[in-house]
Length: 310
Ligand code: NAD
Ligand code: UDP
Image (cartoon, rainbow, N blue to C red; front, side, top):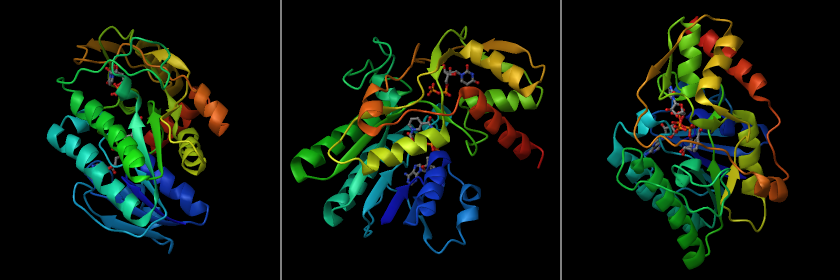
């Protein structure tokens, strides 16, 4: 198949490019390099089934493809808050442009949505039928509400124009090729530990997250795309929940470093708890994560360790 991956030079996108090339598909990676990097895909450039296009999805483009994985969007709070108006445009105009291609060439399109559509959730763990508790006017809203509108657009193009859609809600995912400067908790803590700096826990560290290793997530994404008669949304993530304070202690232990934990103010609207209910993915896709957090963190620590010793 000919497959378009928007945001293909980013963290998740680059792993997805690799996976689909490995299956023998033609892969078009489209990216504006806002948070992605050529380094993430440099090893793929010699593969004649791989094509790279520098393009911003907020601008229209027409491509003949069979599948569209729409991953383009800055994902870390630091990056999506850098230019919030652009973040909204990427989720809204960008998704409209990608749905326009899907409609015209009858491609199947998968939208990378997020656990952020649940906001600061009042039910725990989060199931797909929960509508969420999202602040529409806060500093996270450009991302959360943008992604919610993107889901709405997907459903409306499906109902109105019969576009073949898939929606996944991705929970915190980590692994090699996360951007060094993206401020997410996994990259921050590992880099702080490896550099012997203090580990910055925001708030008292009692908020929870559930971390999924990238190879598990990619497996789930591909299964969802190729699953017949299922539009989603479907949660994809690892239900192994941890408080951020426990997570900091774990990283200190795994890196073998002696960093001290310090506490910094909690950013506004930071969700208190987050854990996916993945029953639907288990049932419909036969999918669940297989990489333990310990194993995944070791691989990620090795990656960052090699990166900073370069
Ligand atoms: P990332 O920032 O590494 O990747 C995003 C990619 O999109 C980058 O390569 C960036 O340059 C590109 N991009 C951004 N705006 C663009 C635009 N207007 N036009 C073209 N390209 C653009 O982030 P990631 O973690 O790989 O996330 C990928 C997708 O998965 C995002 O849509 C994100 O919202 C979603 N997601 C990720 C997580 C996670 O934990 N990693 C969780 C939930 C959802
Ligand atoms: N966090 C932290 N220290 C950091 C970076 C993040 O304590 O250096 C916290 C953050 O406040 C949040 C959690 O870790 O509660 C996850 O943050 P991240 O930005 O990785 O993802 P998100 O909040 O979008 O889930």
